[in-house]
Image (cartoon, rainbow, N blue to C red):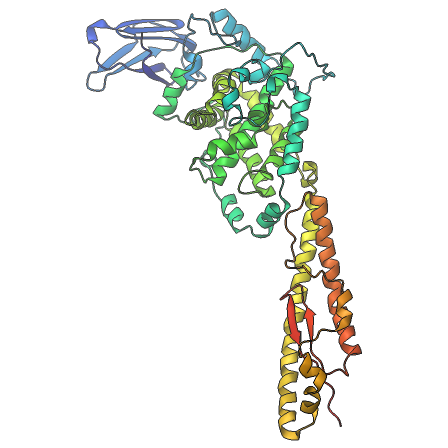
Length: 549
């Protein structure tokens, strides 16, 4: 049997079901509706739905069939007029469960009782903070990962493609603590102070991206949080939902908390990709999303919301093209907006991620491990939990010092260098102007008075060595190989900060040393090479004796 394409809508009196069944005969329709159970059969199509409310067949029901479009429309009266049926866009949750068992360790719905018990669990007040106990490693058990930490043994069969999907090696034998330690070490090695400072001081492109409004920013949340009609799905997205198998997930409080936190982590990465590409996903989108998400790239498990924000912030400043802290803050605001719009908006984001990963050969594994289960699970969660999570994320605070990348010290040292460069440039410009005016007046005096300085300039010592530097510059504090006021990337931020501070110290000493040496050798008629680190490396400055009289 083929599951047909369908969608549902409602008005205060009726539930409306549209079913696309092309190439069927009108005489072969079979329809059954009773309470919350709906069945439709038209060879070779079969559809069974578990409705979120009760319907009745009291003679008011109506059905029409458009032969040209192959569209069957049935209107069923509600048992309670005016009742609002929730989640009509959650097509996967409406499909009745299939009888075949799945080879996956996840639980698939086999009866309505199981589904009802899962919904009752959702009604309980969710505890975002749970008691944590010290985990004792067991070498005999394989480490788990995936949605709700319910998978194991998957990566052992995919060793060849493993390096193109995640950064962690041998996840079956690596504990959660070891994964985090390796992730932090990899981020510390990948952080580039030069790249960060370049985006910090040359931020025209960043400012343009921050002004972009993603698709969810154009949607305003409804007054009734249970109303999901503000988000509409395309036909392709509806087809994605129909292909999913309906499942229920038995999660304890600790696993449920990790699922919610990992969802925030994935949405943050998705929000960054949408903003950085201005809504036009490209060939790098699958890499960006999984690289910025510690959940997808390192199979990370988080214990609180602050750990999620710190992980995301560090990865934004280490890996993608635009490494600016303002992009981190923008992604957090975008994720808050997505969560406030409800599970329909979150589901649409997950469907986009699922499509992006499915179009990339190695990344499809992440759909099997995480995204597909999230697309099914999110359709059954309560909107109040989504709202509570959005409120917590909105109140959360993330500062640069929390990332432990020494960003504030790095920015302070770089700002000092820039200020010194500006000061030196202004001083050099005024000095050059004065020197040119002095040279012009001296030339006119030489032509008018005919002083004997030209004879002194033509002395044997001057002819033998016309460009002889002063011996006192041999011990100059300015490095002879100084070529750039901003040093190249170093091994760590501390080393770069020290080099920047040394640069500021050297530049502040150079003008004083030059003036003192010039005053001490004012009687000399030789020329020397003055080192100017803020401009050219070697600047020829002539020195002349004072005129007699």
